[in-house]
Amino acid sequence: MQPIVAGHHINVGAIFRSAAAFGVDAVLVTPRCADPLYRRSIRVSMGTVFQVPWTRIESWPAGVDSLRELGFHVAALALEQDSVAIRDFAANAPERTAIVFGTEGDGLRRSTIAACDSTVMIPMSGGVDSLNVAAASAVACFALQND
Image (cartoon, rainbow, N blue to C red):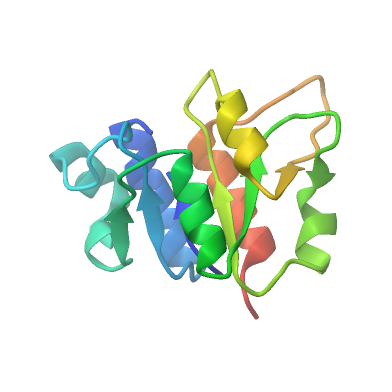
């Protein structure tokens, strides 16, 4: 599994915990993302912010181009008309894939979605249209983990 791009202190901590649990290589945080070293993030992560490599991307969404230059396929997790189900994407996912998660409530900005190579979604039922970003990251990390 490759990097994920992470929001909010509690969600950031939970994303790190999922990243560690499912073998993510690194977490990338954007300039507006909460600090993974904030006490609440560390606590929610159960210390995995010290286990999973991470770095802050200086410029976003221009950072998508940097990831692409490094050989990554960058996929946005978003509800779009052309989104591919995460299980279908995972079946043929490029070896070097970075998944981008949005903020709680607003999701990803249009400029970020447009900058990404593809858009994936988590199919849901029961009239539910989205998950909390921390829960969504866990599902995506599980679906994309390397065996």
